[in-house]
Length: 485
Ligand SMILES: [Zn+2]
Image: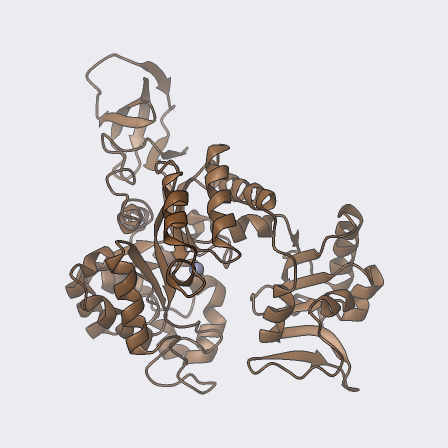
């Protein structure tokens, strides 16, 4: 038993003591009455519940950590130097993946080409993923591996960059980028375990104690469930909550039900568990694929991924099987579709809407009425602000992510990151929720203490973990973080 002394409760600044036994809080009071336990002096630090990132991508975060980081490179020469050094380090048969490439940082904004990368290696596939996540530059070996030939037609939702003579430059946009990315070999199980452990380290360093993976089953459900369990058994520093893609559990090529149950039951639920089922209702604002009322300035009103009937039947299936459901819905039209589907269930309060980036006043009222959870990602406004303004115009863009209106109305809101799409440091996320970035209605910001509760207790509620964590009340896990003055 440990007795933590000499700290202030971060949310009220009250001096307190906390008694912890076997990883759980026994008491947290202004003065713990007993003198039991080994005292640990926290030297006046402020103590908070640890962060809970209830919407991110854990395995992809870890895989990206192992890739070459180009986010600080400001010239083509610098990028090529870094790529060359990485090339020398890697075993010969591996792809060289880099992330956070951005030609906008170069003086003239000109992309690297496949010829530049072929000069580093004509044989090893090299793929530099753009900062946006929607484009990349490939060398000739990567194009070959994806069976992209010189006379390849552009895919319907993408483009292979070409020079004045019609020759491929290696620049890949949207679906062309997806196609070449998909040609890279899948990570092995061992690589997955290492990636999850690395993601756990990085998140724990940010004060996160629990994270929810929002697309488990992207590569292969069986391998991923195995890897998450294995990582948790090898001491992953965060608790793992997994939201499994609908199709991998219920689709035509789903894993057999018995096998899925077996893999779920093999996990220690304190450390790692399947928390629910993930569905996508629409796309993203920056790509003009979110389903909205009205039109994007670049044209179109986005797209719903499923028909109304199809979405309702998917929701019904997962609900009847007893799972919590989390649905990605960014545009206001997608949010209505999801609310309509949830409304048909006996208990819509259990389920979640991810992002809910565009909301009208009427929709906020409906969300309160329905009682489902909503989680938003404040770092998005800092990261995607310019593309939101471009796609929606400054007026509509300024009203995105209405934290204040949701809280005041009584929506069951929480905050999260969506890392690795953004950096994922909750302290930066909180700052973005309190002071909204330039161009976004400042009245939709929240107080810092409110934001902390949204990133801890409210995040635990949306994970259906509120009995276990989020507020450091007796009985909960003693997952805390300290801020020193
Ligand atoms: Zn996500």
